[in-house]
Image (cartoon, rainbow, N blue to C red; front, side, top):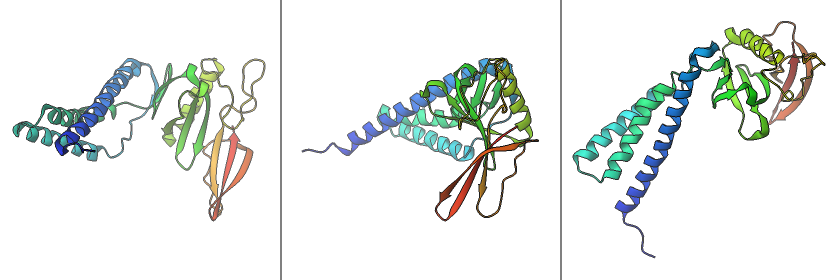
Length: 236
């Protein structure tokens, strides 16, 4: 069987990279346009914490340099375009997406996975590990969990806003992630509003709950190698 020439193989690889980053560009542009539409309806938001942004921008500069070099050397058009698309993504789209502010909006929550409308949220819970993370499970299980890293100074406000959305029946929770939700005939939650899970280790060190009047609802010890982890569901 005759193998493909190295030049042809390189062209296929670069075309694949170009197609992949073209999809990322289109998806990122659609996400940013949606953010522009929901931005005026923000309830509580905070600046995003993009990881490795300088490194990603440096990759974009490298791809731009390779694009110019390939053009100067009159390389095939596929080589030039693939690097140009990569440069556009890292230099334009990554900084643009870093401007999206996560948090709560009038019609939904903007988390790491994008915007999730309240009507699509099936279950939710806060995890303190020790960072405060709001985990959202969409209804129907058609998508994976959405994670929202909540700053400690916004924790109480986020909880209050979610409780208001639940009481107004805008956010209709099926159940807590570990079954800690219950409702009365008026649609009010009894006794909890939102489940909070605390992680403690066997070293005697406990991560404090940051909710006033919180009490333990249930606890499970999970052995992990030589240590055990306690997951405690608390309700306020």
